[in-house]
Length: 393
Image 1 (tube, rainbow, N blue to C red):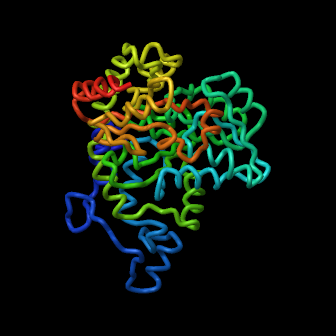
Image 2: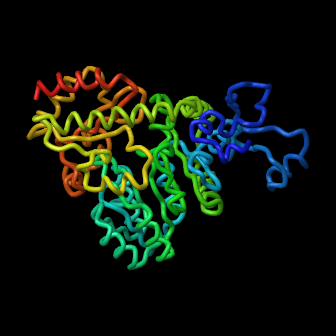
Image 3: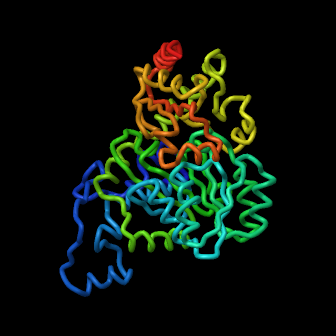
């Protein structure tokens, strides 16, 4: 049986592990070694010149990391994968690999705060033009791409306002323009969405989030075309933002239960979104699983589940939002998402902490917004906790 044809839950458990592991281990060993030794120069040279399989130095490749890369490759159904020390390392290395002075990038206005910083600050300093289009305006996105660009960078659902991009439409426009299409699939996970099957060239992940799922390891991943991934890998091996063996081990352990966790989080987030939509103290709820979401039909077409994260506005000012967040008992006030524990926080300390209040306003992110990442707790307990916290608003 080939894992290529297996269901995601089977791939999450067995991907990269179908052949016997070292020492007969039933779980992937942590190969905590920086260099790898050879009995003679000829065998060492064969590996260095890619005439034989093997490892030389863990900044380049590592046996434990290899398994992580193969598992995410299979889950995203790409030709190749490489990994990084963090999600932002994955995003920045990928963009810096392909962007050159004079190039143009087209993206959306609602991307993750760190990504926005690259678009608003660092890439323009390199002489790269970036056009950010109003998220959800398909006509404007098509027109911006048609004017010519090197890269089309997409994120759907977006962080933290859960907006949806029509991936097939945007990727078709990118192909027509000869641009590389890159999709951040962190919020959706490969359980809910596979951008490569919709035509994307590359998919990036913050593996720290849903893939690891336990808030104990940082990492990033890139999956896609073998030739494009090779180029990014080369940039990463020289700049040094590699994933360590112990982090890869922790991420692999978390990925075993990825499908189970995401299924529970999908269910809880939808139930919470419906509950909050009917609550008189909640002004607006952002979740693509709601039939009232402006792009629900698109999400239903390209996603198998709507994800474990929602956001909503509480109160008329930031003080009311703080009172709500401080009153939560079953949520860590912490700057992450996708964990087995529920996490909550405002954009000024989570997704867009790197941005000023003015930049957040420019990006259409209200200060009263709460990003709520559902864990695997019982929905009824989370609902009661949220209800009690709303009583404080």
